[in-house]
Length: 367
Image (cartoon, rainbow, N blue to C red; front, side):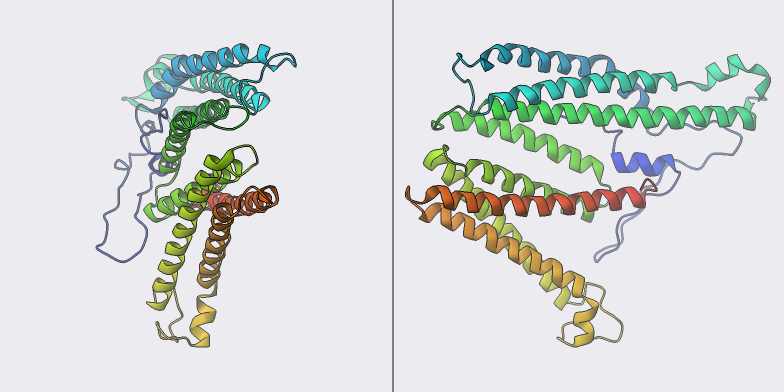
């Protein structure tokens, strides 16, 4: 799953600027920087980084994206006649499933168009030398010709990144449609959960791939994986908690909520342990490991994060307990409360994930 990531999204961005890729500060043995190739002389061409990125994007836009667009539109065309009022419903949310397939096909068309625009600006030094032979002296381009080549390279990379974005958005929408179309109307039988679980694993794998490629900082990448996993667990648990999924759906939702609650507690415990050990940037005048007012003020943001993680654990754990302890009577109101809590927690994690993405882009000079 997942198309060309430019070898590594973060390394691509840093290598394009000729800067070293350094590991985050932290305890443990010092890590060596992963650097881009040696900085070239000023009177030479600007190479693409990674070297095969443009070719991989053209392969994506010329083969993979059209193929996936055809598959998405075929699924939508096959399911569209079943939306008539007289036809039996093939899924719990048929309109949502068809909409996801249509959106996936449109995203892949966007990938094809963006790949065409990327190819418009993709040029080789040999081509530039043939077009302007007087601007190359002793095998070295003039400043004007270097600016032409670098300007085209910048625009080509910009459209290549947009191609990759459309492509992965289309894959996520296609996998989401596959997951939605697998949920039958009425109660979900036991064997159908195998199909739903397989589709959910595919979607989770694609999201994990995207998160891994989007972050270079190991600590930030680890945090992003946690936020995405908690957000997806909260959303899936909220959906499984709605009326109509029966006892099995209620059990799945309770397990997901309980697992997310345990994860929140683990994070909160680690944060408190790191603060008590003096690893959260306490001021020089405070002593790590003491409960002095100066130390608490210096670490208030970390304490707020620990409190948020603990509160999320309480909400998720309470939701799991309510689902397991509530019978048929009053189940609708309880599930409504659980769905609201799960969605709120998932939304909080999505906000934190967006913050991490913005921090990563700002560090690379793209914010």
